[in-house]
Length: 304
Length: 301
Image (cartoon, rainbow over the protein chains, first blue to last red):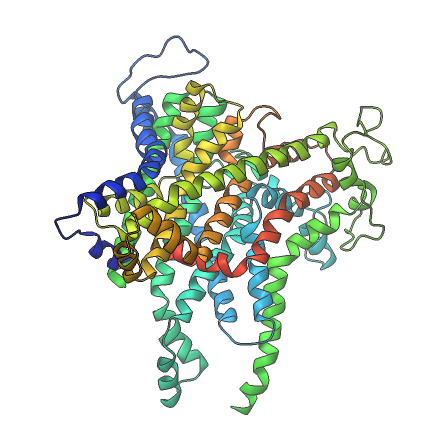
């Protein structure tokens, strides 16, 4: 939220009674919805996480205090999934930043066809993740996929490869599919930040004899910091929680190579039907996301 | 200097080609293979452009009355063993479910977010900043963390496998973003408008409906689009709450095709093409609104 709206948010008393009442009425539907989306799940999933609730055994639900959390933290599988989530996130966010910056630099130029490019940029953003998943599954297909076909025709490989069957490559391949869909939003946000850079900065630099490269390094990139911060925070959140592509492309496999945190929550709750530990895991995940958001905002905030 | 003037168009052209290749090539491949027969799709190296384009994959989806049975499902393609599944007829009802949910969510979303955003932007009241902070916090909660409490809640209400479960939860995940878009737009409109309307004797509700709503059209379009696309594309919650065609949405049925390795990819790709057509058309038609909405929603958030 902008500083302006929060500063203005402090009401100068006295507030008119009519305004107070109509504001409350206007906010009522939203409050009801937020009670469902935020307050209720946060409280309720914490409550559930204190029980050994298994849907396979619905009649006996013992209260176990923090046993579910203890079990999670002692489970090596959990820590491995944390590591995988971290490397998926780092890979994805780095790639998104690089590609989105290049795209935004291109779209910031004036040339014929620029409008067409920016319209096409919205295509990956708009399509459903499920469609994105099946598209990449088909591209990576070991029998007849485009990746094999292309690399074979270009003579990079001499026989078709089982791309998604190789535990060393799968996480990166899923990340690639995720990046393709996330890049447009990042590029749009960076482009908006670029457009807000005052033009006289560039003309002054030109007068001083700075070349294209120097202008990029000394003006554009430093001025993009707020945009970078925004994109890093947003895309980190998205990558940490991402589930859909893992479901469609790999189902956590092969040999657990893509068994990330979100997948762990899914397996624990909906395959093992252990809602107690599933809730505890989800709770840990939500807390991690919060902490991550705050720490990124703080570290980036210092540099801004 | 002269050299760089000459180089510029060349560099821009190369960059544009790379850009378009990256963005469109995967989609192009999806499109191309959805028009290929099972026999053609399994050629090595692949046919980048169909040599013998066919509509059989699409007609299997649209001709649900032409019963696909065990005997007929291999028709035309006995050689490869790939077939069009009998579940092909599920795709259109699922798309109808998706459409119903999306439209209801859009309408309810507007009813919930417009007054809330107006109140936050223009009315001074006690608790205004805390309601804005509450909105901020809800945007950080990952949807996977909501799944367990949502599931138990929906089960308790007896709404599993019911479209209502999707409407409730999609409303919950789309409202915060909508309010952010609207809030930043209402804030950009002058306070004097509000004061003038109030002096003229408009109630708060009249001020909102007669003065602000007509001015807010661009942000309303953005809200409608985002809400529609989010509902249309949502997968995780639908996966948890739906069990049969009574409530299964498009992403669920499409995902069920991909997890069955006996189904021909030419058919799966046709389903994928149908799934992406509505959102892609909306996105290209309303590009301007989407870009401004994304910026408002994300920058402010």
